[in-house]
Length: 215
Ligand code: SF4
Ligand code: SF4
Image 1 (tube, rainbow, N blue to C red):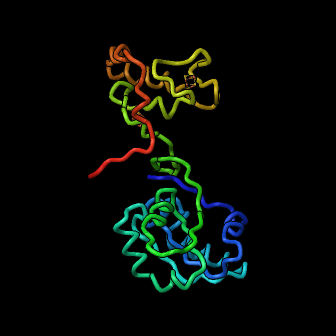
Image 2 (cartoon, helix red, strand yellow; image 1 turned 90 degrees about the vertical axis):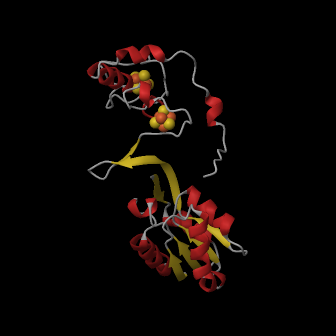
Image 3 (cartoon, rainbow, N blue to C red; image 1 turned 180 degrees about the vertical axis):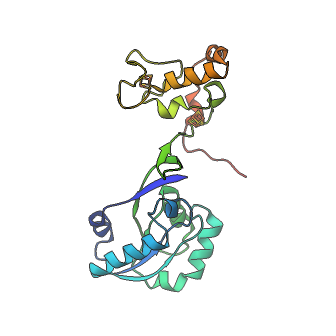
């Protein structure tokens, strides 16, 4: 899931500027789970904007605004309301925002309502955890299914740095050094031999952006 947080209202108002009539597009998946762009979040945003003298002409919550087919259908369904608005405010991740831009077939100002933070999983307490950075060459098979690229602040691939102190990370002493966790996990699974399989440096050319893949 893509983790987002809503921007401060003062920033959103600054972006909207003189625009009076606003149409809001949210996201029925990740931003709903993050409570940044679901129906309830949009209703709260509507109230806030109305207190500031704006009029919300309508809203739409595509299941996944990052999917062209879905966002196109929602835009078509709401075309009149959108055309009558001065601007669109998108409460979704950077993918959703750009997808709205790329799939809107008429000219309308689009503004950003959320900051996109990271790809995350949600634990049973509802906390979002960053566990993958989409590096394009997964090493989890060798690391006990614990990602050093994402969870070591230095993204080290060959073991702990010299700053590791009694199992804690030198960058944040509240956190375990991820390489100690990896070592313990491999030891538990009787797979310590995997540590010797890191032979060549990681091929960071596989992270060259932008990625593109057709399904
Ligand atoms: S190694 Fe880490 S960052 Fe790369 S794909 Fe696997 S989990 Fe994601
Ligand atoms: S102490 Fe461990 S987790 Fe922290 S930066 Fe060094 S290797 Fe990475």
